[in-house]
Length: 230
Length: 230
DNA sequence: CAGTGGTCTAGACCACAAG
DNA sequence: TTGTGGTCTAGACCACTGG
Image (cartoon, rainbow over all chains, first blue to last red; front, top):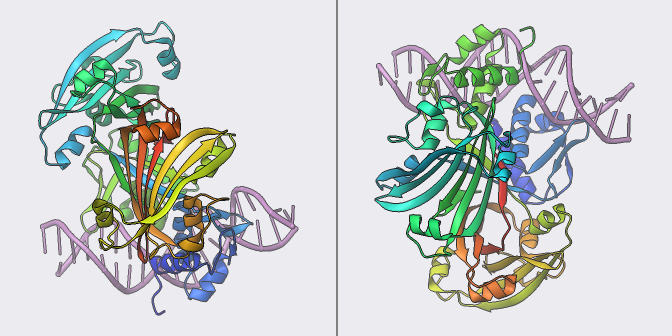
C-alpha cells in the first residue's frame, strides 16, 4: 500500500464489482471516503472512477454519487482504418479501381439524407478495392462538391476517395450502420461472388463543419469480418 | 482566455489540427510550452492531449513528444446491450424461447476455440429472441460448465442466457467478430425468412478469470443493423 | 440548500526511450 | 544521459442536481 496508482485503484474497484462486494446498482463510497481508505489523493480516485465510468461499469452523477451499473454495458471500440492500410496489414498487396465517376442528380432519398436541395447535383463514385488482385470491397459513394472542397481537382488514382477525404477534409463526425445484404447482380459481378451471397455492408455518413461531405456504402465479400475485443 | 478548461484546450488543439496549422505527422509543442502559451497548469494540457490521443488524433511517446497522427484513425464505440433491453428500447415487447438445451461433446474446432479437452462435454443452447412476437435473433451458444459456475442450476425462462451470464459471471474480456452469412435452412426456418437471406452474424467469445466461459453466434434477421456514431 | 462529482493549480518525482 | 510524457499530491473552487 506504499504507492497507489490510479491503475491500482481501478483494479481494486473492478475486483470489488466482480466479487459482488459492490453489487449491481449499489452506491459506492464517495471519492473522499475512498481517498481516505486507499490513502491517496482524491484526484487519483477521481481518475480511476472516471475511466471505469467511461468503460460503462460505473454510473456517476453529481450529488447522487457513484453506482455500479445495473447492466454492465460492454463497450467495444471499433477502429475504422483506411482500406489500403487494412489490406496491407494482412500482408496482401492493395489496389483499387474507379469503376465509375459521374456528376448527377441523386435519388430523392439520398438528397434527403445528404441534406441537399433536390436539384443539387452530387458526385457519384463507384470503385473496387482489391487485395492481392482479388476483389475485396465494393464501394458506392456520393460526395457533395459544396462540402468536399477541392473535390473537382482531386484525382483518385494513387489514393482512394476515403484516403483523399481523410487527408483533405476536416471531418468532424458521422454515423455508421453495419448490416448484411444479399449481393445484387452488379455487386456480385464486381466482387466475383455468386448472386445473393451475403455481404457485410457498412453504411457511413461523414460530416465536416460545412455539412455532410459524403455517404458511402461499403460492401465486403466473405470471409471479411470486423473484429474487435472487449 | 480568463478561465481555461481542458475542453477549451481540446477544442483549440483540434482546430489547429483541422486547420493544418499542425500538419499530419508533425511534432507539436511540449506540455510545458503549451501550458505557458495557454496560461494554465500542465495537468490541464496533459488531460486534453491524453484524451485526444485516446481518440486517435495524436500519438504520444515519452521523450519523443506528441505528434499529429498521420492517419487519423476514426474510432467508434460499439455498445453491446442485452438483447432484451435492445428490443424494449424500440418499444417492442421482448420474448425469447429456448429451442434446445443439451450437454454434449462439441465439434473439434469449437473445443479448440474454447480451450477445452477434446473429451470435455459442453452445454449447447439454441434460442430464439422475439420482438413483438416476430423472430429477431437466433442464438447458438456453447457454455463451459467448468468456467460458467452455477450453470447447471441456472434456468433461462425469465432471462436469456446472456442476461444470466452478465449478472452471474464476472466477465473479464472477450473477442467479437461481425460478418455476414446466408441463412441456413434451419436458421431461415427459425427466423422466418427465405433460405439464403443475408444475416448479420455476431460471433462472440467471452472470458472470465477462470477461462473461456462461452462462445455464441448471434444471427440477426434483416433489417437489423448495428448503429453508432463517430 | 447542501453534498457530490468535476476541474484547476502548482509543484514534485518518476518512467521510459531517443540520441 | 536527458528530455518528454505520466502520474501523484494537497488544496481549492465550481457546477450540477437530489432531497
